[in-house]
Image 1 (cartoon, rainbow, N blue to C red):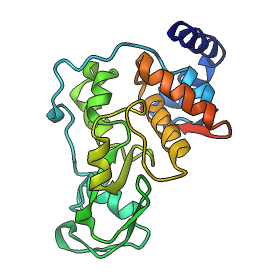
Image 2 (image 1 turned 180 degrees about the vertical axis):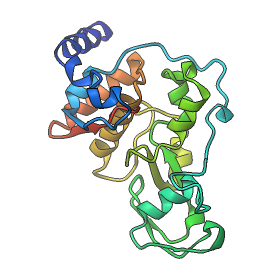
Image 3 (image 1 turned 30 degrees about the horizontal axis):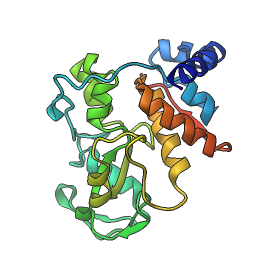
Image 4 (image 1 turned 180 degrees about the horizontal axis):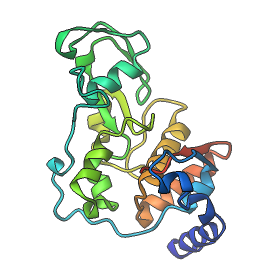
Length: 225
């Protein structure tokens, strides 16, 4: 089975690499154009590699930093909560959030207190470390942990659902809410492609099966600078 999966990945990779190549805009430090692929194609171009947890510490990823506006007192976590609020909270002194309402799509729950939310890394920090971030600079790991440039990198969800997910990949955990599996899988794959992260064979097999169940779902991503 694994050999067949590897052959499928290689066949897809032979077709798609031009879509993943650096553009002139990237070379000059400007944002790349978003790429959109059918989910099965996107899964097929994820690089395969063994996961290595050795040396991981959560502190290897500096977060939360000062966010996109260092002068407003709001860190990355607060900026995510403000941007994802269905009903905006009041932003008080020191970026304390009062009121507001959020939809946690992992478990289909409304949340009306910012303290009841976690900001989840779509691909958890430990999983990112296992999948290639262990070789990054500290600055790139910080950029990953505070990625406000991709809407699906950081997600406001209930603390309970985030802690249930922990550092699991889609072979081990999927959101319990009905009807969100395809969305979640697309966002997971898009995040791995954005940051050039690898998948192991178990994860690849799970993503391949999920893609088969989501034939009309696409994956959109911007390669990270």
